[in-house]
Image 1 (cartoon, one colour):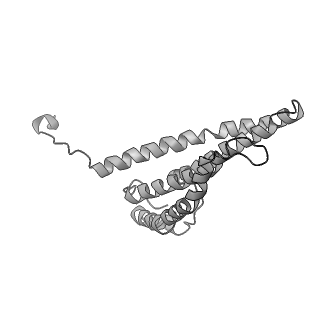
Image 2 (tube, helix red, strand yellow):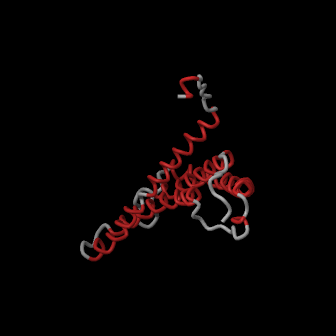
Image 3 (cartoon, rainbow, N blue to C red):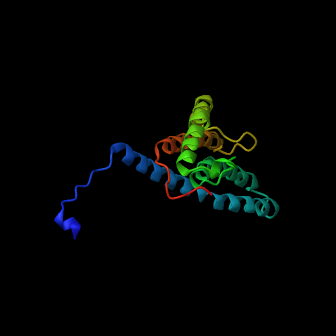
Length: 180
């Protein structure tokens, strides 16, 4: 009723807030999608024994495919653990602080460790990964294609962590949680 008496002017969200929400949603979708790769990894690992023992064929290829699927799974799981706050961390004292202070400590950790580490990994791995992808590198012992995917997962992991770190810097702290 009050809304009908007064004209409510909605302020459109700033471009920065919109970009943060879009990137946050995209990263969430991507790591959730990569999380589903655990199922094919388990299936491929399970199939190796019957393929080797019963059919005497295909077990090495199943192992190779399982390796690159696992590499993609692990590349995203680090970011997923950070998003869900389930990674290992030493917050014995910090968890008793106010949420705003915890958020500032988290931002400091992102600035001091996550972003520099992700940038270093991207810088150091880029030549190796681009060479591997450009040559469609194969597994050395089997000749199966796809080894370049394992090396590419390194870049995917670093990019996901870098974007997640930048998102963590610009997100507002969660004020719904109190100190434990």
